Image (cartoon, rainbow, N blue to C red; front, side):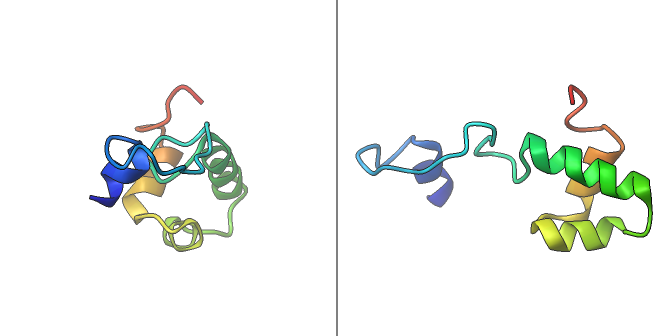
Length: 73
């Protein structure tokens, strides 16, 4: 239900502040992915640490770093 409200499919009369660079289905935005990749490549940080910091699942970070997702960036 919350996803439908945030994506604008229901409760359309309510204003929702959305970052235009953030897709409602994804938890990371372009800037997050760029920063995560930079920090991971620099070393000293694990997927789990990044996932905890950005509030996403470990697999989300892993896929972004390995370019399984967000290939176009």
